Structure formats: structure tokens, C-alpha cells
Length: 85
Image (cartoon, rainbow, N blue to C red; front, side, top):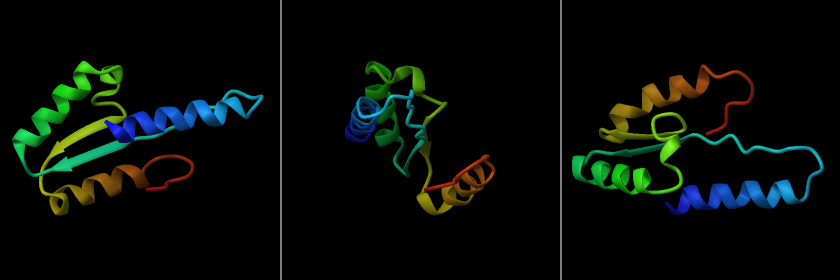
């Protein structure tokens, strides 16, 4: 939740210094092997002001990171423009 809040705060802060409209395009991949941890995070996000971002820019993946990495990397590399991770 701290990462989501800080990204939103950064967007507001940067926008305040600019004349042109600015949107921070951030995708979050939260990976955990524990089903319970993923469920708890999903529940917290669903209750928050970020609920509309679930499954679009907020992805909660129940898997060991080593198993999820290849798919995440491929998704990032398939995007247009800059691919930073």
C-alpha cells in the first residue's frame, strides 16, 4: 500500500511543477508464493481507492518469484516505448 501511495504522491508532486498534463504510468507486480499473503493484499487493495487498478496496473501474482519472472519480463519487454523495471 505504501508503494501505491508514494506513486500517487509522486504524480501529484511532479504535476504541480509542470504546465503540461502529466501522468505517471506505473505497473505494479506483487509476487508472493503464499496464497494467504496474496489474498490479504488483494483484499486491502480492493478496499482502497486503488481498487479500480486491480488486474490492470496492479497485478497480484501467487507464485514463487522465480516462476513468475519470465512472464513479467516478457510483458514489460512487449510494451511500446521505454521499458523500465
